[in-house]
Image 1 (cartoon, helix red, strand yellow):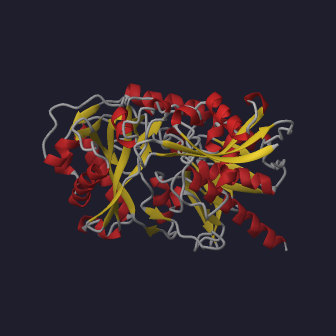
Image 2 (cartoon, one colour):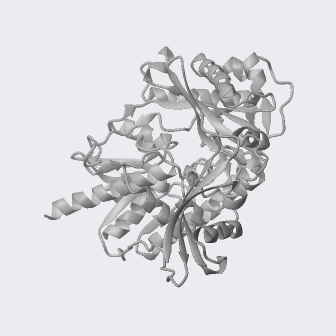
Image 3 (cartoon, one colour):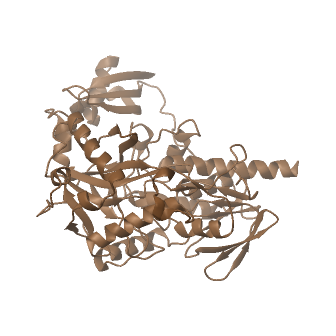
Amino acid sequence: MNKILNLSLRPRVAFSDKALKSVVASKLRVPPSEIRKLNIQKRSIDARKHKVIVHLSLEAVFGKAPVSPSEFFPPYKNVSGSSEVLIIGTGPAGLFAALRLIELGMKPVLIERGVDIHERKKDIAKLIREKKIDGNSNYCFGEGGAGTFSDGKLYTRSKKRGDVDKILRVLHFHGAQEEILFDAHPHIGSDRLPSVIENIRKSIIDHGGEIRFGCRLTDLVLSSGKIKEVVLQTGEHIPVRELILATGHSARDIYELLSKKGILLEEKSFALGVRVEHPQELINSIQYHNDDQMAFLPSAEYRLSARIEGRGVYSFCMCPGGYIIPSMTSENEMVVNGMSSSGRNTPFANSGIVVEVGPGDWGKSEAGKKLPGLNFQMKLERKAFEESGSQVMAPAQRLGDFLEGRFSGSLPANSYLAGLVSSPLHEWLPGIIQNPLKHAFLDFGKKMKGFLTNDAIITGLESRTSSPVRIPRDTQTLEHLQINNLFPCGEGAGYSGGIISSAVDGVRCAEAVFNKNQSVKR
């Protein structure tokens, strides 16, 4: 027989296969030996009260019921001789656009400025060890995009835009752990995501698609309102029929190229601020209320937001049991982000705490400049670099000192492997960032008792939350408003934020390309 059960259990039972099986058997009034399989469908942690509860929805297969296969096999076709679609970028938007094109019978040709995941890991290690930044291979650029080394968080609020469950199934099919299919806040982990990306690459190539690494886009040849050719750094010209542009939020040279070519761009709001880090043990005790079964629970996370002086201030890319990492893409700039492995097992919890800024904030100094929001972002990143005095060391301050306006004479133990340097962030962060941050931290301290501590540090600059630029497109066809064979896609186009929403947007753009080609045939 098969039976769906909804259970609310304590952590010691919910996270133990043996104990959970025993509880289910008792509910069904059968011996544990008769339980053939437990298929967890949803799992969430409820820590609102002092006793933490885990809510589970599961299917129990027991007795003589057959265990039906639950494997998912994407309907990929051999597209080696099919019509080609050029995709710039191999982040989640580009990769999932490619997979969807293969399902639809079209051949994706992916162009990536960086290197494959294996070589990319070497360049990232060199960044920490030798303090040198490779502008094409770093935490933002290379196979898999920026999300590959940023925990692999899969939570999204954009579920109305596409089939999120299918995205998760595709990731699981390519090697992600089963838990992503049922956890309320799924993640893969930066240690496991590279192998998933490699398997996706294999699927693309095995079914006739192409991926070319070390090929940075440097120019576009336009004719009659279309892109006729793309030009690579090698000087090679590639003819274009349809182009999906999925270059990510940090490809500033692409924005500059589009602007130079007179291709329409729009300013948009984004957010920047700092990354705050606490001892993970402290966050666990706050979030789990020192529950006596905390040892059975995963590292606690949090989500915080406030409205200060008309601006949104919120936590971003929270990484329990994680590391702070250097995420700049060029020399003479300092950017930080966070990442976690699948185990989320370091002694530290970090999160971006960022402030919304918009076109009215760029100031007179940016007046008349093209892409003023981008210039505003770059200016602050250069200031953070100047404060660090090193290509990879990050400026930091104890949280309590930041609030009190004191220089930190020392910094606590932390996860930033490249090294921190004490810096008065309270002096050099602009008022439109600094003041909302201070008030928001005070608010967060009321929501999470113990959050305000001088054992916590803030590091700067957390500035790559999303793109300051949008590449406008038609809401129905998803084509650029001006160039009718250009499909702006993903975070770099200003239409998504994070792995899942970017993957969903990639799927939508692939379907838009397919639909356009079908209408032409008719």
